[in-house]
Length: 454
Image (cartoon, rainbow, N blue to C red; front, top):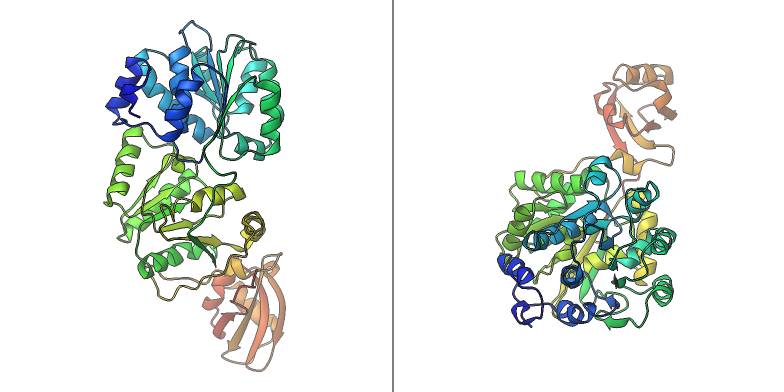
């Protein structure tokens, strides 16, 4: 169905048309007409277009009465910014203000813009402003829970229940979630009456057709491994980082080495994000570096590789990430970079997908040279075991003094065993790189550079 054929406000149609949105997705076509009349529970996968599925009904029903008429709860600051931006673009045509409220920033400006007819916020900041008397939800006509399953994972259930108790009784409720854990089903039964259900995705987003691997690598060599992977297996890459800052830094560094890579994150202007996405779809860019939240609107065909540059902290995010390749019956590959500190998170992922993910070895070398990552080879105390060869016979005391002259403190040196021409010692990883400067050593090598099998 085309938006032009829907029974929605012409101003909304004008906004969608200006952005090039002509055809409704499945979730939009099925949910929008129903959500304008009754409560809805929608299970729909990431990238399905669900944001417009709840925003359009809201704009059909609010009256711009001078109160908060719609509250949209989301799990993260980045998603609050993203959803509010979508609402703001439609709101311009309707001359209706929107507001995003979230923690981590000063609340004065947020207070100054209250009440706004449409508020998008994270549960913690919403509760805070309500308790301080700056935010009232007594006149709310629409209550939306977006990414409800992720909010459950992050421990927001009690906050959501508290907020719901302070919402006016005459409100329509919309619940959107990629999965339906028991907590969400229980919440829906308690607070939603005669809700229509739309099960538009499997209970867990599948990763069928995706070959999954991991590479054990420390932080300082991730770039080198990524370069080697891209050069060895050319294709269309979607790379995930856990923070916006790292997303931007990685894209810029790859660009400096000649790769066509660009970042996608919540701090980018909408025009820049749209341009980047279009170029990625058209093949002008073959490497897109993104955060989880920014990638939620991505529905791009022919992605050959998904790389988890950072291990996701939630197993469901892993499945969401890798599900972006291997679509439409095509083959796809997912590679996760696992540091020593990430092993527990990775084991949880394996338990979640009920699969032992094999380790991958990259045959070639990329454009970026690998370095010895002493931290990855250190024990729980940060000590690295090295073996060395001596230029001349020396005492332990003389060896320590030679190391101190190169900036290695005595407290950073552990057990030392010296033979006539060689020896073994422990040194803290933060100073291990200085060992090569110690003139008394003829050669220094880390012991056990092979990672243990997980």
